[in-house]
View 1 (cartoon, rainbow, N blue to C red):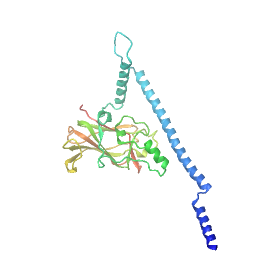
View 2: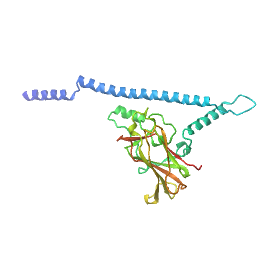
View 3: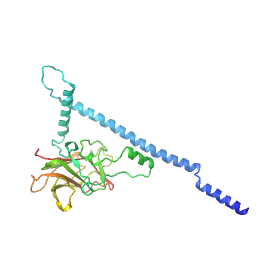
View 4: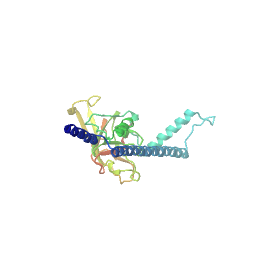
Length: 283
Protein backbone atom coordinates (compact mmCIF):
# COMPACT_ATOMS: atom_id res chain seq x y z
CA UNK A 1 0.00 0.00 0.00
CA UNK A 2 2.84 2.37 0.89
CA UNK A 3 4.58 1.61 -2.43
CA UNK A 4 1.35 2.30 -4.39
CA UNK A 5 0.90 5.59 -2.56
CA UNK A 6 4.49 6.53 -3.28
CA UNK A 7 4.07 5.72 -7.00
CA UNK A 8 0.87 7.79 -7.20
CA UNK A 9 2.67 10.68 -5.51
CA UNK A 10 5.54 10.46 -8.04
CA UNK A 11 3.07 10.38 -10.95
CA UNK A 12 1.30 13.45 -9.59
CA UNK A 13 4.62 15.28 -9.20
CA UNK A 14 5.60 14.29 -12.75
CA UNK A 15 2.22 15.48 -14.04
CA UNK A 16 2.73 18.80 -12.34
CA UNK A 17 6.12 19.15 -13.99
CA UNK A 18 4.95 18.24 -17.53
CA UNK A 19 1.55 19.94 -17.68
CA UNK A 20 1.89 23.61 -18.71
CA UNK A 21 0.65 26.06 -16.15
CA UNK A 22 -1.82 28.80 -16.96
CA UNK A 23 0.97 31.34 -16.43
CA UNK A 24 3.28 29.63 -18.98
CA UNK A 25 0.47 29.40 -21.55
CA UNK A 26 -0.32 33.09 -21.19
CA UNK A 27 3.38 33.94 -21.47
CA UNK A 28 3.69 31.83 -24.63
CA UNK A 29 0.61 33.48 -26.18
CA UNK A 30 1.95 36.93 -25.30
CA UNK A 31 5.23 36.11 -27.07
CA UNK A 32 3.36 34.95 -30.16
CA UNK A 33 1.17 38.04 -30.13
CA UNK A 34 4.28 40.18 -29.84
CA UNK A 35 5.77 38.46 -32.90
CA UNK A 36 2.56 38.97 -34.90
CA UNK A 37 2.45 42.60 -33.79
CA UNK A 38 6.00 43.15 -35.06
CA UNK A 39 5.17 41.54 -38.40
CA UNK A 40 2.06 43.71 -38.79
CA UNK A 41 4.09 46.78 -37.85
CA UNK A 42 6.61 45.97 -40.57
CA UNK A 43 3.83 45.37 -43.08
CA UNK A 44 2.35 48.76 -42.19
CA UNK A 45 5.75 50.38 -42.83
CA UNK A 46 5.95 48.61 -46.20
CA UNK A 47 2.50 49.88 -47.15
CA UNK A 48 3.49 53.41 -46.16
CA UNK A 49 6.63 53.06 -48.28
CA UNK A 50 4.57 51.86 -51.24
CA UNK A 51 2.34 54.89 -50.85
CA UNK A 52 5.39 57.17 -50.73
CA UNK A 53 6.87 55.51 -53.82
CA UNK A 54 3.60 55.86 -55.70
CA UNK A 55 3.34 59.54 -54.82
CA UNK A 56 6.95 59.97 -55.93
CA UNK A 57 6.21 58.46 -59.33
CA UNK A 58 3.18 60.72 -59.72
CA UNK A 59 5.33 63.73 -58.85
CA UNK A 60 7.96 62.61 -61.40
CA UNK A 61 5.26 62.28 -64.06
CA UNK A 62 3.93 65.74 -63.25
CA UNK A 63 7.43 67.23 -63.53
CA UNK A 64 7.82 65.69 -66.96
CA UNK A 65 4.48 67.09 -68.06
CA UNK A 66 5.36 70.53 -66.69
CA UNK A 67 8.64 70.46 -68.63
CA UNK A 68 6.63 69.88 -71.73
CA UNK A 69 6.31 66.92 -74.08
CA UNK A 70 6.76 67.50 -77.80
CA UNK A 71 3.66 66.04 -79.40
CA UNK A 72 3.72 65.11 -83.10
CA UNK A 73 2.24 67.69 -85.42
CA UNK A 74 -0.75 66.49 -87.42
CA UNK A 75 -3.89 67.79 -89.01
CA UNK A 76 -5.79 66.69 -85.93
CA UNK A 77 -5.08 67.90 -82.41
CA UNK A 78 -6.11 64.51 -81.01
CA UNK A 79 -3.71 61.63 -80.36
CA UNK A 80 -4.51 57.99 -79.71
CA UNK A 81 -4.03 56.29 -76.36
CA UNK A 82 -1.15 54.25 -77.83
CA UNK A 83 0.63 57.40 -79.04
CA UNK A 84 0.20 59.02 -75.63
CA UNK A 85 1.63 55.96 -73.85
CA UNK A 86 4.60 55.84 -76.23
CA UNK A 87 5.33 59.52 -75.63
CA UNK A 88 5.10 59.15 -71.85
CA UNK A 89 7.34 56.05 -71.89
CA UNK A 90 9.94 57.82 -74.03
CA UNK A 91 10.00 60.86 -71.77
CA UNK A 92 10.27 58.74 -68.61
CA UNK A 93 13.24 56.87 -70.09
CA UNK A 94 14.85 60.19 -71.05
CA UNK A 95 14.30 61.55 -67.54
CA UNK A 96 15.85 58.44 -65.96
CA UNK A 97 18.90 58.55 -68.24
CA UNK A 98 19.40 62.27 -67.65
CA UNK A 99 20.14 61.65 -63.96
CA UNK A 100 23.74 60.88 -64.96
CA UNK A 101 23.46 61.11 -68.74
CA UNK A 102 24.95 57.64 -69.38
CA UNK A 103 23.46 54.45 -70.76
CA UNK A 104 23.55 51.41 -68.47
CA UNK A 105 24.70 48.08 -69.95
CA UNK A 106 24.18 46.26 -66.64
CA UNK A 107 20.38 46.46 -66.70
CA UNK A 108 18.60 43.13 -66.46
CA UNK A 109 16.04 44.47 -68.93
CA UNK A 110 18.90 44.87 -71.45
CA UNK A 111 19.69 41.15 -71.23
CA UNK A 112 22.29 41.10 -68.46
CA UNK A 113 22.34 37.93 -66.32
CA UNK A 114 23.77 37.18 -62.88
CA UNK A 115 26.41 34.44 -62.75
CA UNK A 116 25.38 32.40 -59.70
CA UNK A 117 28.47 30.24 -59.29
CA UNK A 118 29.49 30.53 -55.62
CA UNK A 119 32.92 32.03 -56.29
CA UNK A 120 31.47 34.61 -58.68
CA UNK A 121 28.40 35.93 -56.86
CA UNK A 122 28.02 35.91 -53.08
CA UNK A 123 25.11 34.53 -51.12
CA UNK A 124 22.11 36.69 -50.32
CA UNK A 125 21.74 37.60 -46.66
CA UNK A 126 18.54 36.28 -45.14
CA UNK A 127 17.45 37.31 -41.62
CA UNK A 128 17.47 34.29 -39.30
CA UNK A 129 14.65 33.70 -36.84
CA UNK A 130 13.58 30.90 -34.51
CA UNK A 131 9.94 31.82 -34.92
CA UNK A 132 8.02 29.26 -36.98
CA UNK A 133 5.45 31.94 -37.79
CA UNK A 134 8.08 34.34 -39.15
CA UNK A 135 9.77 31.51 -41.05
CA UNK A 136 6.43 30.73 -42.69
CA UNK A 137 5.95 34.39 -43.64
CA UNK A 138 9.45 34.48 -45.08
CA UNK A 139 8.54 31.59 -47.38
CA UNK A 140 5.34 33.27 -48.56
CA UNK A 141 6.71 36.84 -48.72
CA UNK A 142 10.52 36.58 -49.06
CA UNK A 143 12.24 39.39 -47.15
CA UNK A 144 15.55 38.87 -49.01
CA UNK A 145 15.87 40.37 -52.49
CA UNK A 146 17.92 38.56 -55.10
CA UNK A 147 21.07 39.91 -56.84
CA UNK A 148 18.98 40.98 -59.86
CA UNK A 149 17.71 43.82 -57.64
CA UNK A 150 21.11 45.52 -58.10
CA UNK A 151 20.69 45.62 -61.89
CA UNK A 152 17.17 47.02 -61.95
CA UNK A 153 16.33 50.75 -62.16
CA UNK A 154 14.30 50.98 -58.94
CA UNK A 155 16.27 52.36 -55.96
CA UNK A 156 13.54 53.04 -53.40
CA UNK A 157 14.27 52.56 -49.69
CA UNK A 158 14.85 48.88 -48.93
CA UNK A 159 14.96 47.82 -52.59
CA UNK A 160 18.56 46.64 -52.50
CA UNK A 161 20.48 43.38 -52.70
CA UNK A 162 21.85 42.52 -49.25
CA UNK A 163 24.88 40.33 -49.87
CA UNK A 164 26.44 38.32 -47.06
CA UNK A 165 29.05 40.06 -44.88
CA UNK A 166 30.94 43.30 -45.42
CA UNK A 167 32.79 41.92 -48.47
CA UNK A 168 31.05 40.24 -51.37
CA UNK A 169 30.98 39.74 -55.15
CA UNK A 170 28.52 40.25 -58.00
CA UNK A 171 29.41 38.86 -61.43
CA UNK A 172 27.39 39.80 -64.48
CA UNK A 173 27.16 38.36 -67.97
CA UNK A 174 26.32 41.17 -70.38
CA UNK A 175 24.18 40.66 -73.47
CA UNK A 176 27.26 41.42 -75.58
CA UNK A 177 30.94 42.22 -75.08
CA UNK A 178 31.63 45.93 -74.50
CA UNK A 179 34.59 48.14 -73.67
CA UNK A 180 33.48 49.60 -70.32
CA UNK A 181 34.48 53.21 -69.74
CA UNK A 182 32.97 53.83 -66.31
CA UNK A 183 30.93 52.29 -63.49
CA UNK A 184 28.32 53.78 -61.16
CA UNK A 185 27.11 52.79 -57.70
CA UNK A 186 23.68 53.92 -56.44
CA UNK A 187 22.73 54.21 -52.78
CA UNK A 188 19.93 56.05 -51.04
CA UNK A 189 20.63 59.41 -49.47
CA UNK A 190 22.21 59.46 -46.02
CA UNK A 191 19.38 61.79 -44.97
CA UNK A 192 16.70 59.08 -45.41
CA UNK A 193 18.69 55.84 -44.94
CA UNK A 194 17.69 53.72 -41.94
CA UNK A 195 21.25 52.46 -41.55
CA UNK A 196 24.05 53.90 -43.68
CA UNK A 197 26.61 51.44 -42.27
CA UNK A 198 25.61 48.79 -44.84
CA UNK A 199 26.51 51.03 -47.81
CA UNK A 200 29.42 49.85 -50.00
CA UNK A 201 32.73 51.59 -49.37
CA UNK A 202 35.90 50.25 -51.03
CA UNK A 203 35.40 48.17 -54.16
CA UNK A 204 37.06 47.15 -57.39
CA UNK A 205 35.85 46.03 -60.79
CA UNK A 206 37.22 43.22 -62.93
CA UNK A 207 36.77 42.31 -66.56
CA UNK A 208 36.68 38.56 -67.10
CA UNK A 209 37.97 36.83 -70.23
CA UNK A 210 37.16 33.23 -71.02
CA UNK A 211 37.25 31.08 -74.12
CA UNK A 212 33.71 30.07 -74.90
CA UNK A 213 30.23 31.18 -73.99
CA UNK A 214 30.13 30.36 -70.27
CA UNK A 215 32.24 30.38 -67.12
CA UNK A 216 31.74 26.69 -66.33
CA UNK A 217 35.37 25.93 -67.12
CA UNK A 218 38.54 25.36 -65.15
CA UNK A 219 39.64 28.48 -63.28
CA UNK A 220 43.01 28.29 -65.07
CA UNK A 221 41.17 29.19 -68.29
CA UNK A 222 39.66 32.35 -66.77
CA UNK A 223 41.59 35.62 -66.92
CA UNK A 224 40.74 38.55 -64.64
CA UNK A 225 41.67 42.07 -65.74
CA UNK A 226 41.56 44.79 -63.09
CA UNK A 227 39.55 47.78 -64.31
CA UNK A 228 40.02 49.95 -61.23
CA UNK A 229 39.98 50.36 -57.45
CA UNK A 230 37.35 52.79 -56.20
CA UNK A 231 35.68 54.25 -53.09
CA UNK A 232 31.98 55.06 -52.72
CA UNK A 233 31.64 58.03 -50.35
CA UNK A 234 28.33 58.16 -48.44
CA UNK A 235 29.24 61.64 -47.20
CA UNK A 236 29.77 62.97 -50.73
CA UNK A 237 26.15 64.03 -51.13
CA UNK A 238 25.47 62.34 -54.47
CA UNK A 239 23.38 59.17 -54.45
CA UNK A 240 24.78 58.06 -57.82
CA UNK A 241 28.59 58.19 -57.99
CA UNK A 242 30.47 57.40 -61.20
CA UNK A 243 34.02 56.00 -61.40
CA UNK A 244 36.16 55.86 -64.54
CA UNK A 245 38.05 52.82 -65.73
CA UNK A 246 41.79 52.47 -65.19
CA UNK A 247 44.26 50.45 -67.22
CA UNK A 248 46.51 50.53 -70.24
CA UNK A 249 44.10 49.20 -72.86
CA UNK A 250 40.82 51.06 -72.43
CA UNK A 251 39.45 49.56 -75.65
CA UNK A 252 39.58 45.96 -74.41
CA UNK A 253 36.10 44.46 -74.37
CA UNK A 254 34.53 42.05 -71.90
CA UNK A 255 31.31 40.07 -71.75
CA UNK A 256 31.67 39.36 -68.04
CA UNK A 257 32.13 42.05 -65.38
CA UNK A 258 32.78 41.31 -61.71
CA UNK A 259 32.09 43.80 -58.93
CA UNK A 260 34.13 42.99 -55.83
CA UNK A 261 33.03 44.91 -52.73
CA UNK A 262 35.93 45.02 -50.28
CA UNK A 263 34.28 46.81 -47.35
CA UNK A 264 31.25 48.76 -46.18
CA UNK A 265 30.71 51.46 -43.54
CA UNK A 266 30.70 49.16 -40.53
CA UNK A 267 27.89 46.62 -40.91
CA UNK A 268 29.16 43.10 -40.11
CA UNK A 269 26.24 41.01 -41.37
CA UNK A 270 25.62 42.32 -44.88
CA UNK A 271 26.30 45.02 -47.48
CA UNK A 272 23.37 46.69 -49.22
CA UNK A 273 23.87 47.25 -52.96
CA UNK A 274 21.07 49.32 -54.48
CA UNK A 275 22.34 49.48 -58.05
CA UNK A 276 25.48 48.79 -60.07
CA UNK A 277 25.77 50.38 -63.51
CA UNK A 278 28.20 49.72 -66.36
CA UNK A 279 28.81 52.43 -68.96
CA UNK A 280 30.51 52.44 -72.33
CA UNK A 281 31.31 55.28 -74.72
CA UNK A 282 30.82 52.88 -77.61
CA UNK A 283 27.39 51.54 -78.47
